[in-house]
Image 1 (cartoon, one colour):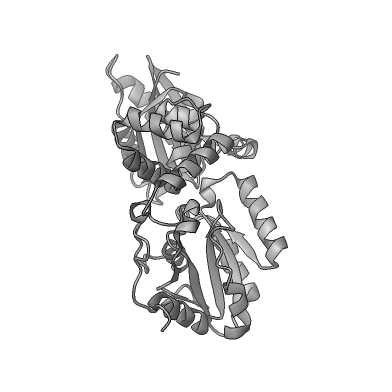
Image 2: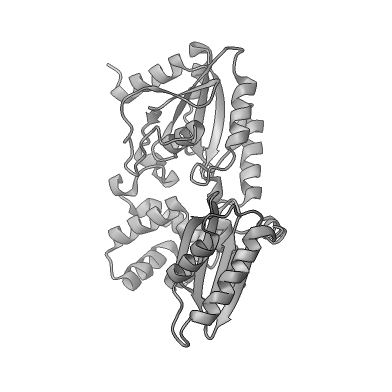
Length: 366
């Protein structure tokens, strides 16, 4: 008898007209289910490859991977960030373009563990219809959720389990890996190659050593055993925090620098920074939470428009405020570049009657 996961995946495929194959944009081959394309004619669905976690790579890299998959597999491909709700307008348009001419399109979602299937369902349906968890294989049950007038999305994705051979893709929850050491060494090797300086910045280790010695040095600095250190590295790699400030490319810098400041957002930033200069005790680091309180009070009941950005130096401390960009991570990166130094505190929140995104960053030194 086929395993339970296989029967469930087959049901998803048989009931869907469009199937989204979710992969990790960093590991498009390792998170590919080879068998899926052979089942298209069997179940009469159209496949769309969705490269998730695009916020964890430079945009140029996401574009390169997308073009490579499309050319190699001859399949419509879209990159998105489920966490940042980025790319879903394009994904919806692609679904409608490839779907049959029916009143309501039924969409199924399949992929390896922890590539973000449930989060994609939430974004498509614009609500938390599918529960999500870091634990692989968490989603259970099945129901169709309306994702607009013409879209029905199954809220129980087809979970395809990976094996130890695919562990390097870090599609599994690090906590359930039988041996986290080899995948962690693979991550160290890749980070040193693609994000030089990230491990030194995060842990203060010498990146010229071989991966095993780097892992051992990180373990000693953290005061943890090697297995625990390996799991921590994998978790930070999965959520992107390990290389957070090293993902910026020249295109990203240009895009951020060309965001036109102005409107209500810029006035609020300037008023907030003037007020924090007046109330911050000399020699005491200002709290990001305090700055957040000032900005929230000033924006209360207002519709905030435009983009605001500004920084101020208070002795050895720097305070930066950004309002109105679409992406929290981009605001943080820009503030860190402008302020320099070590991050003391950070706040991410929404302000104003229309809920615009805002970030406050406090750093020490330059």
